[in-house]
Length: 179
Image (tube, rainbow, N blue to C red; front, side, top):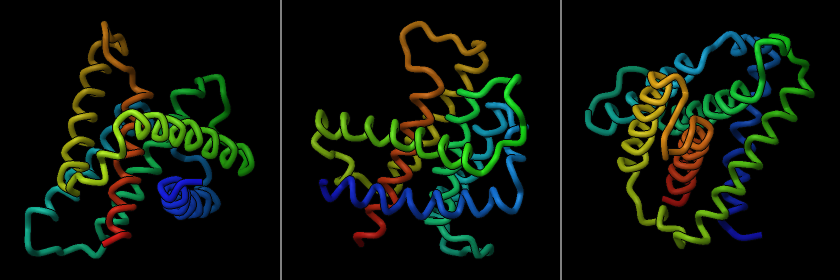
């Protein structure tokens, strides 16, 4: 296993643990969220990171890595919600939630491996600011896709954007861990 995969899995493991603990506390209350609400939750977190990057004073204790972890977990929620339908139950048991989480992360990690093959891990030379800007750009794209009733002519869909957002947030946390 490459170092990138080990780092990726370490970041995701921490996020998954937090997600599953919150699932025990709150259940699957997130099942009521529509796609635009998930996009907005990710936007709030990404915008807060950008604001903290630009300001010298922070007034709320939540740190930037915590916000990136939140982005990861909301991206996973978004991917799960795209798979589930209104006919699926709102309340999912813990084993089902864990399996869905694992599936979405595994699919996204495979995408990361494929892109790393083609791009040569260019993300390792990127700045934290770029990851946030790219996440914000993806969110704007997703809003446009939603305003087009989910239809695209030549562009990737919502799922690919969630996967890219998830990967950018994982990359940001990997690089923070290395510094």
